[in-house]
Image 1: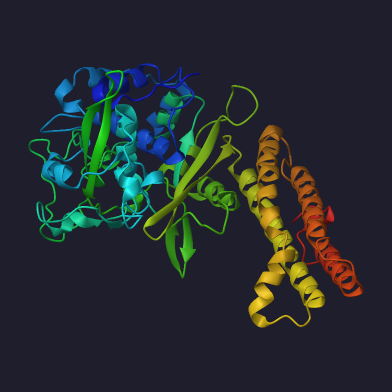
Image 2: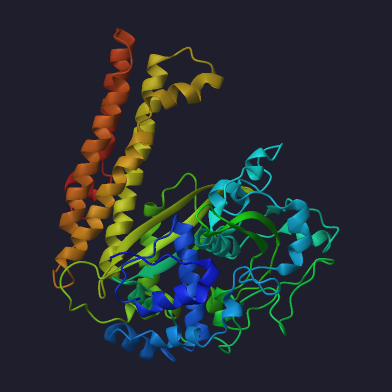
Length: 508
């Protein structure tokens, strides 16, 4: 099904169309995983603001099972004054701060600064040339990019002076989803996705952040260091303005409305209660302190899928407990839902890449999926460790006189882990799909698929190791290096320490 594109110049009409067609649409049409999440966040905020949310966990289950219509959100949008949703209103621009008007004239840049994937650290090149490049954005694209800035923007320094609004305008705090994995439960339609991620509202429904300049709304200043504020409601949380942004409208070559200049400064800083405001978070222990699962540049997200399933299996409150409470799906085989995990990888202030993955979930199968994903990750970890050991042995034999400073590079030449990890991802997803297909009525839907998965990964790891070893030139020493590495590998994967599935056995 086609997806509706948000048009920021007439936002409430486009948003209303999304709600009117929510159960016809399979997905949103956004340019990045983070932008998709940001738009879902905004749609959830509208649901909460319009009173379109269940009053209890029991009612939530009914909403999901019955496919509750979201028309009340569309009706609420229809009743909204158009000026309140005008992206370019001179006093109350949608999701923006009109107090930046003078700074926009003095310090505005091209639109590269608005798009997280293009902006770098907002000051990426010393001459700022890329930020000055003339590259107008369609209004809809600029609106979605603004929403993404509000939730995902990294910390850093604003490319503007502080003489107009105060020095603190230049201190960019990290967005509320920056530095952690956001998990969205995906259904088969946009409407089902929204229902799955709604929950009993916290606080009154009327605190929706239309504009920084909405009359009667108190905002932080930029003269002094602000105290983080507690969100007043669920609508407030999901529509919070994590940046001060202002967009300048222009006309495109065919008369269409575009954005050609932007300025970005500091926004709101929130004090978040884990139980109330981070219902999707999956926690891992760090030095004895629980921390929400974070994006890692060295550990692929699929290796942490077991943490998602553990949350569904064990959590007593919040989103995962509600998900566990759903009854078995009656609409056929396969996974009716997916846990979609999204994070932004960053090197300090510099965004690097989006990391994301979708992991199937069917009611009643959390325990099976947790076991399969945990064992699947353990098997891959063990094989990767073995590949590293084999590479180290081979390098030691082939290059006996290598200097300590050269050791890492010589081992890396023979280390097959860097090709093994990407190759392991698809078999892992196929393992989860196979467990789901077998279903909870199978006495043991996990063991058979796990043994097949382990055999597949073992063959892949061995093949890739041999390819690396084959790069050694002919010679007695290199033949001994190759033979020693193969013996080590074969001994490791058949030893009692190896995961049982690598030996074709069922783990206990």
